[in-house]
Length: 106
Image (cartoon, rainbow, N blue to C red; front, side, top):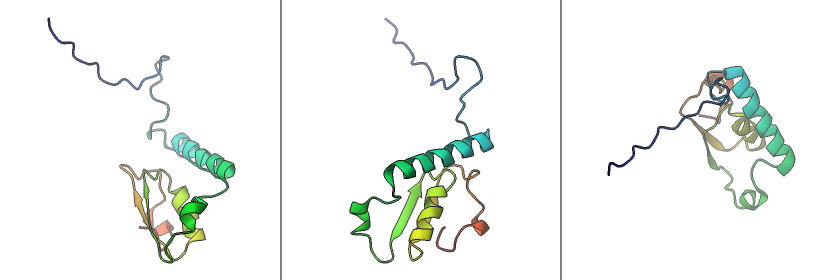
């Protein structure tokens, strides 16, 4: 009996329009990410959980992995100007150019 080869992941929608959340639709994707950020912030009322904030060092090192549009990190840089903030993502096309970011964001 021959083992079946698993099918590759298919991210297309049933209507044939493709994966709607892709980065190639940069304006729509960035808008969705920014809306998600504001919805979560409105629901939670904080960027960094209070339990972590209590033990945060005076000059914290904070990384944002899969940063998307960098909106969370930009907001955190306002609240914690002494923090060293690092941005990580496979594709930074949706994030602002480095010269537009605050000095504490790398």
